[in-house]
Length: 478
Ligand SMILES: Cc1cc2nc3c(=O)[nH]c(=O)nc-3n(C[C@H](O)[C@H](O)[C@H](O)COP(=O)(O)OP(=O)(O)OC[C@H]3O[C@@H](n4cnc5c(N)ncnc54)[C@H](O)[C@@H]3O)c2cc1C
Ligand code: SF4
Image (tube, rainbow, N blue to C red; front, side, top):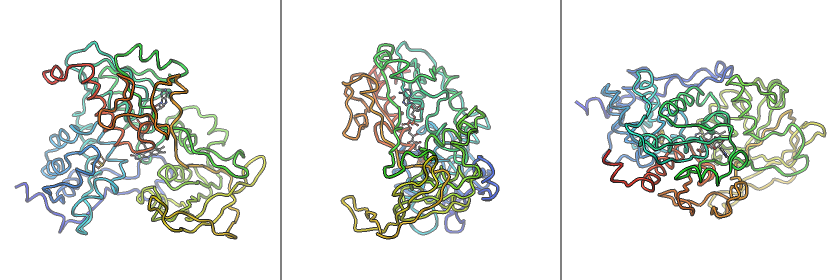
C-alpha cells in the first residue's frame, strides 16, 4: 500500500505551488507562492523514492525525518505528518518558506540527482504545518508542571525563540529580552513579507507567550539593563543577539545622503507593513517610490532590497554585483523571482565612489572580470581598467553583509571570549561559552547564517542548559 502511493517520480513531474504573476505580486508584500491543495500536496509528496539513506535528511540542519512525513502526506495522514515534522523543527512552516532548499534538503534529493526534479520538500513542509495551524493541532507548549530554575535569553530571533520553546516545555521560567518592540529578530524586521508574511511569525510569538514565556521588549542589553544584572537574575543565560554591524562602503562620496544600509531600509519597510508610524519612510529617506534605485551586493539581503524597491514603486531597480551570476551568494530562485519582477542585474560591476554633493546622483561603476581562483578556490574579481561609467541613482542601498557587534565592550563583559572575527566563542555541540552558565547560539556564533541553523543551535543549547540546570534523569522521568 505504502509503495503504491510513493515512488511516483517517474510519471509525476515536479510541481511547486502556483506562483502569483509577477505584475500582481509587485503590487503588494504578500507571499508569492500559493498553498498546495490537499490532493496536490499528496501527489507531490508521493514522488519521494523513500531512499534507505535519505540524503535530504542528512543535509537538513535539523535532520528532519523528511521521507516519513512525505509518506504520511501522500497517504493523507496529515496529523501524523505534522507530529513527525514538529518533533525536530520548532518552526517548520517558516523553514518551509525561507530555507534555501536548493542548497540543503532539495539540493541533495536522490531523484533530483537522477534528473527527475527534486521532491518539493519545503513546500510540503509548509503545507503540513499551515494545515496543522488551520486545524488547531499547533498548541502552546504549556508545561505540565513548573520548575523554579530560570533562564534569560538575550535576543528574540529564531535561535532565542527555539531555545525558549524547548525550555518552557520543561517548566523552566524563561524570559526573552529584545531591543526591538516585537520579537522574531530578522524574521520580523529583516525578511520581507513576500517571503514570510508577518502574521506567521507573530502567531508563534503569541503562542510562546501563551505557554508562559515572558518577553521584555524595547530592552537593549548593555544600555537598558546590564549583562551582569541579567546573569544575576537567572540561573543560566543564552546569548542569541545575531549580527547587525553593516559592512561599510569606502571611496569618494561614501557618506553622501541617499546611501542607506540594507537593514535600515528593510526594517522601515517591514514596520510600514505592520502599520507603524515610520517617519524615515514618510520623509522619503527610506522609501524607493519614484526613484532610480541601485542596490550593491549579491546576497539574499540584496535580493530582498531589490524586490522591496520594486514593490514600493521605484522607477528602475538595478543590482550591482562584482562577480557573475554563477558565483553570487544569493539564492538562484530568489534571483529569478527578482528578474521576473523587473529587477536588472548588472553582473561584474562594483562601486568606485558616488557622485552628488547634497544627495547622491550616481554610482561611479567599475567593471570587473573574474581572475584566477584565490586561496578559497573562488575566482577573485579584477578591475577592467578604462571600463568605468556612472550609473544615475536617487537611492543607493548597500547590502555588503553583517559583522558582530563588540559584545564584550558593549556589555562591559571583558571575560566573554570571542573569536578573531568578533563572534562569541561557543562549543559547537553544547553551545557553552567560556563563562559557566552562559551559552550562545545563531548568527552571533556562526556569523551571518540561516534561520534553520539558528533553530538547530537554539534547540541544542536548550538541551545543554537543561543538563546544566536540571539532572537529565529528572527531566526524562517527567
Ligand atoms: C535581509 C535578510 C534576509 C534573510 N533571508 C533569509 C532567508 O531567506 N532564509 C534564511 O534561512 N535566512 C535568511 N537570513 C538570515 C537569518 O535571518 C539569520 O541567519 C537568522 O535570523 C539568525 O537568527 P538569530 O536568532 O541568530 O538572530 P536574529 O534573527 O538576528 O535575532 C537576534 C535578536 O537579538 C536582538 N538583539 C540584538 N542585540 C541585542 C541586545 N543588545 N539587547 C537585546 N536584544 C538584542 C535583536 O533585536 C534580534 O531580535 C536573512 C537575513 C537578512 C538580514
Ligand atoms: S528545515 Fe529547511 S533544510 Fe530542513 S527539510 Fe525543511 S526546508 Fe529542508
